[in-house]
Amino acid sequence: MANEDLVPTDVWFPHYRDESFEIKYNPRHRWYYKKGMSPDETVVFELYSMTPKTAKQSFVHIWHSLITPPAWAGIPKRESIEVRAILIG
Image (cartoon, rainbow, N blue to C red; front, side, top):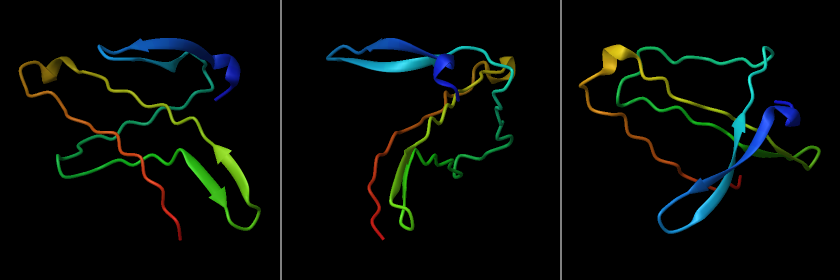
């Protein structure tokens, strides 16, 4: 993801304001669809990594979205959570 594809955006919540990014269209972007996932399946995104051999830190932009097909009308909405964890090995 090129930095010029990112648009800084304010995100307003009832009790605080945060900052995030929107994404400009770019034909180089690649999106993947996880078809047929069941409620007991999970997708995990790794956003930060430190490679032990090089001790090089890297932050990766992992953009994700949800499409709402018309066939979903009238069914319960999906639920998602955000979990942040530090794993030390």
